[in-house]
Image 1 (spheres, one colour):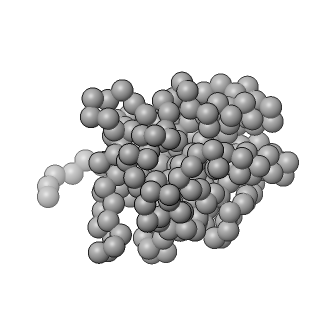
Image 2: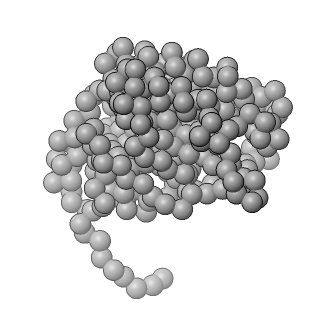
Length: 276
């Protein structure tokens, strides 16, 4: 199966971002991809909560979601919308960071709300409090599809290996990690963490990413690492999107999942222990 990873450099205006996203999805399908994936924050990347409230929608009314569902149906592809920022009815007014798996008929096959919030102090100038604007999800999601059993995660989830182990032990063949990974931590940790999750689970890991500088009309903007990756179950990097927006392709064979787990069946070797 051929997968196509869309690498984006979005701004804080969903109306500007959507045509670019659609063009890359069409290019991925034209290149033979049966499964196309976009990164985290496909609709908008913004640090300004008031601006987000003005431009975000709830799921039922979101124009990016509607357009991408229509395009998946038109092209007859499976589409992972890495995530969309969405309004919720939560009393505290926080948003959802929600990933969608869209079937080739345009239907929503699965939803996943990012569980782990990016609340970090990377440096004196790189401080993030995702939980101030977004509320964390509470449920792991495994989607059974003709293109394999897909475990859905988002970005900062990558640092919590127990989530990936649970998905693999539940039957996942493919783990998706759409991201808007910070440029500093990305250079240090992105590839090694993705390869580790693949090796630990014997899964394909597919990680479409945001890249470059993301300007904001109501904020200072931010930088992301890029390097959308596809990693095989044995840990080899099959595709690297570099740092430019565009599409990167890889061919995957789910028989390699069985082969890797047959060599090292560590998913069946858990043991209880005491301490520390």
